[in-house]
Amino acid sequence: MRHERGLLIVLSGPSGVGKGTVRKAIFENKDLDLQYSISMTTRQPREGEVHGVDYFFTTKEDFQQRIGENKFLEWAEFVGNFYGTPIEYVEKTLSEGKDIFLEIEVQGALQVKKAFPEGIFIFLAPPSMSELQNRIVTRGTETEDIILNRMNAAKEEIEMMDAYDYVVENDQVELACERIKAIMISEHLKRERVANYYKRMMEAE
Ligand SMILES: Nc1ncnc2c1ncn2[C@@H]1O[C@H](COP(=O)(O)OP(=O)(O)OP(=O)(O)O)[C@@H](O)[C@H]1O
Ligand SMILES: Nc1nc2c(ncn2[C@@H]2O[C@H](COP(=O)(O)O)[C@@H](O)[C@H]2O)c(=O)[nH]1
Image (tube, rainbow, N blue to C red; front, side, top):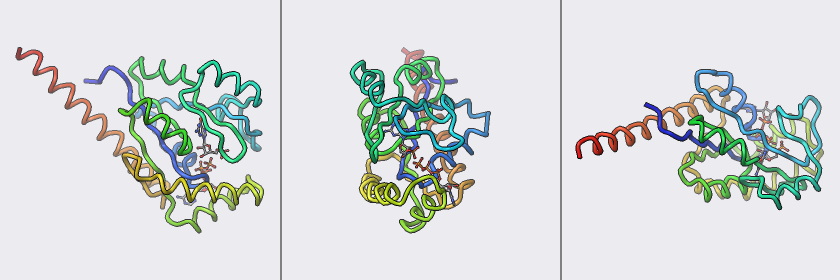
């Protein structure tokens, strides 16, 4: 039996920890029937990024107008750019009983937790700060200044780990994926058990 609304899963953590890499690996498994929430950003596209696949790229003016129109479930300014989760797709997906997966930074995740306390909040943690820096440098997409700012943000973000339901270390991509899949399966089973229990109670009355 499937509960009526889908699950909202938030994967968060510092820049460069591997959220995108792990998320793409999770989405390779089509059995999970998971929808990805494509964020909107004012950041310039990186080489190879596609509008409507990686992000919806937009201007600061358009982003600010959307904030005024309450078009975001959450939004945040992160190291000089705006990022936000379009609310309409999230609501539509959940109301169709499908699970939705958000990959966002920490300020945004905490906003979502207030709006959706029933969501599943997963913090992806690096094996060490030096490995985090190594990953973001090796990715080769950011300037030295931006890397420094993102590493400074990472120190504050790591302090918020306690606010999450789960902490998953991304030591190896395959292991991190397996841990996240196990969390999602276990959360589904828990909700099904609760729903079945209530159904039995109602039938017994
Ligand atoms: N477990 C891992 N071991 C080694 N390298 C990894 C691992 N996971 C990801 N990486 C590498 O680390 C770099 C950063 O990964 P990725 O872009 O997925 O991070 P991110 O958290 O999505 O970053 P951002 O928040 O800036 O978008 C990439 O070059 C990726 O290949
Ligand atoms: N609060 C939000 N954060 C988001 C969203 N989409 C992505 N992000 C996070 O921003 C940083 C930087 O991303 P990058 O692509 O410029 O490296 C990273 O932690 C993303 O996960 C969002 O909609 N809201």
